[in-house]
Length: 214
Image (cartoon, rainbow, N blue to C red; front, side):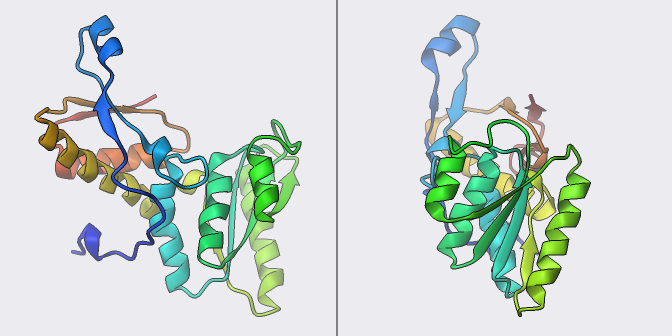
C-alpha cells in the first residue's frame, strides 16, 4: 500500500498553517476550542482548496496535461485558486462556472481577470451539463495537440481529499507540540471533499475522534 508521502504532490501553500486557541470563545462555551488557519496558506487569498490542488495538479502534471478545467459558482474560491495554482505550473486554466451569483468583475472575478484566465458561464443548475461542456471544449482543444485535466467542483474526489488527510497529520503534530488532545474536529462542508479527507485523516491519525461537517 502506498504511503501518503509517496504520492506526487506539488508545493503551493505555506505549511504548516497556524493552529492556536480561541480563548474568548473557549471561555464563553466552556470548551477548549482551537482553530486551524488554512486561510493563511499563502496562495491568492488562501483557503481549503490549495491542499487538494497540490495533489490534483501534481496528477495533471504527471499525465502531461497543459490545460486544466474546473467549475463552481460565479465567485468560486476553488475555481480562482485552481487558476492561480495551475498558472504556477505553466498550465492554461479554463473556468466553466454557473451563471449564478455575482458575475460582474468583483471579488474573485477581479483576480481571475488579473490572472488572464478564460472564464465561461453556463446558465444551468446542473453540474452534469457543465462537466459535459468541459469535456466538449477539451475535445476541441485536443485537435490542436492539447491535453486537458478535469477537476470537479471543489476539487472533491478521492485524490483531492488526500489534502485534508494530510492536514489532519499536520495539526495532530501541532496539537501534540501544544500538549492538547483533540476530541472533536469541526469544519464547513460543501462539495464534501474536505470532510472526506478529515474523516480519513482522523481514522489514521486521530482514531476515535469525531468529525462533523457543517
